[in-house]
Length: 142
Ligand code: AMP
Image (cartoon, rainbow, N blue to C red; front, side, top):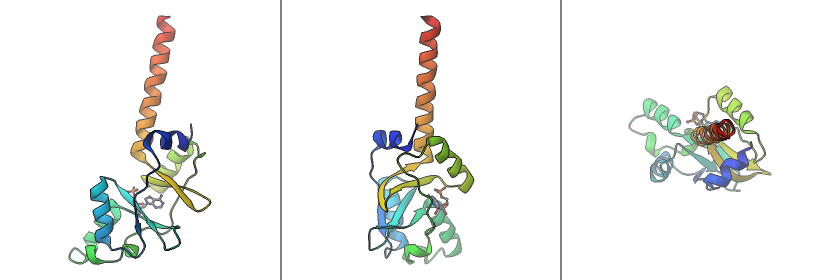
């Protein structure tokens, strides 16, 4: 199974902020869309970074009073690990575990095609396991 199977069921919407936005804008998007990470885009429409709720908490720990007014670039991870639509889910899980990340933007030829979270992967894995169990039950009963 590949990343594309997840995008087909969850859609390709990715919530983003511009690189010149403030941390409060990223927090606003995390809150408004009930998500764990936003992708930061540069002026050319390329991925410049990613900000997860964990980054915001770290910054709040360092600068509780001023964090929200800081540029998002001070909070984001600039070296973004991405995948493609044909990336196998097993490889995605391996990378999420290895890099300790829970979000992976899907990027092809510099274009943002979607985003997959660890929650999306777990949901898909549970569905797959349930389908396998049901097929096995039918096989045994039949
Ligand atoms: P997360 O587990 O996704 O909440 O993120 C944990 C840390 O990894 C934060 O510092 C994020 O900025 C960073 N991070 C999340 N996703 C990615 C990614 N795809 N590539 C690089 N860093 C990431």
